Length: 163
Image 1 (tube, rainbow, N blue to C red):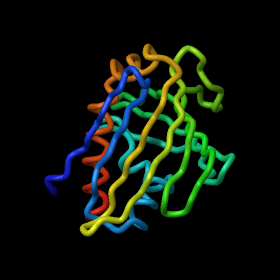
Image 2: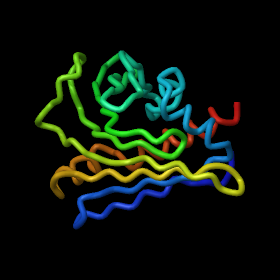
Image 3: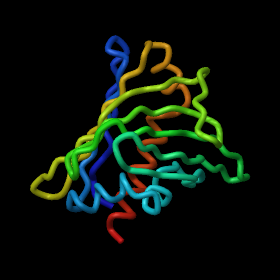
Image 4: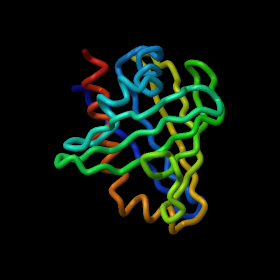
């Protein structure tokens, strides 16, 4: 595994969190890992959890409905709505928690953000910024273990990209 690490920057005043990491892989490969459910299911859940897609339509106006499945088969549902997509460059999303039918849970934070993919001399940098409606919403996500979870997921993605 390379020395690339996941950088997470929390800004409570701006109600945002920015995640970035460089991967030793071409943009096309990293893009596919973020946009195709068969690949997302292999790295998106922080081990021992895993993602399991119920439905994905990677088009503007479409969404990804998936469960985070725990080691004892417990399921926490989430939905990522695709607002806009620029092929191999980035996409804008709305990210929320929901039930197995995709009905958003109003008691948990909903965020909006964008993922950006940039070619580098040695691979691809991915940066995504999520903005929350309140500081408390961001605090809730942090307390749920977001930083540790996304770091584990990106480590898993790095392993997948080497295959």
